[in-house]
Amino acid sequence: MKRYLTLKTIIFTFVLFSTIGKAQELTNEHKQMLKYDNTAYFNNLINKDNINACYKIEDNAYTLLGLAIKMNSKEVFQKLIDEKADLEKACDGKTPLMFAAKYGNTEFTKKLLANGVKKDTKTSSGYTALDYAKKYEKSDVIKLLE
Image (cartoon, rainbow, N blue to C red; front, side, top):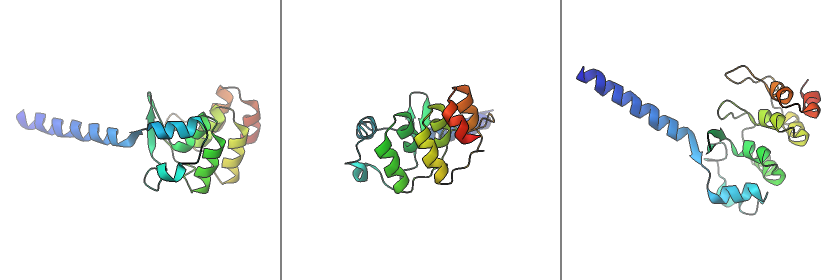
């Protein structure tokens, strides 16, 4: 019994730390960059180690690209593309294209598609970017994804 509890404790600790390691907290500097769509300090804040990280916001996780889409930060979005952010990176199962579809942003959707993003990527529940565009009734994005 004692051995079982020890193994159970080890597994729980491992799962806890691996979950914590998946999503980072967004710094105030990152928040300001996204909120004001200001890339002046981009090179001080973004590097190869964090450009594709998942950042925890409330109960969800987003890449910086996903956050730029959510916050309509066009300059940050373009800078992330220029700096070779992973355009297919999913956090909590959702890709940047899914966020562009959900928020109905045709400009971001077009840029992602022009850069070769796959339209048919699915979440663990089987949803695609097109499904999100339909769910949130984003007709212009639906046309781009059909």
